[in-house]
Length: 180
Image (cartoon, rainbow, N blue to C red; front, top):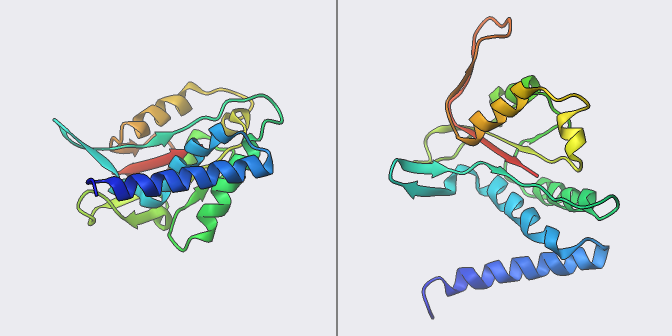
């Protein structure tokens, strides 16, 4: 066998299986890859990283399924949610409609902190956002602060918020956000 042949076969089986299931329920098979990547990255968490010249880069994942009304976006998102909820692994799922403040609050809660990471000893604030419509995710108003926060979290930077009237600042040392 060639090195990596087994993992390639597993990948092909997962993707083929998901594509077949999506065809059966009337969802475009193009939605299978983002759905599977969201499932894997949410369940594997920050054990998935790239080594760069600056050190390990932990990849937050924001994926978008773009299609017209009735194309099956909601069914693909529901599939991801169902699969994740059927596992026995801890994967906090955030509300589908969030504000910047609720996103930070969800990430900062103790129940979202899981032992994952580069050395498997660091605390990681993890969360999964599953929204079937982009408009539902960002609400009926657009606040640039939400997008700035999402960019900061995307970079995996230490996040600290002191602007709200809270007794202690909110700190997120290792954000890991997956979004579909």
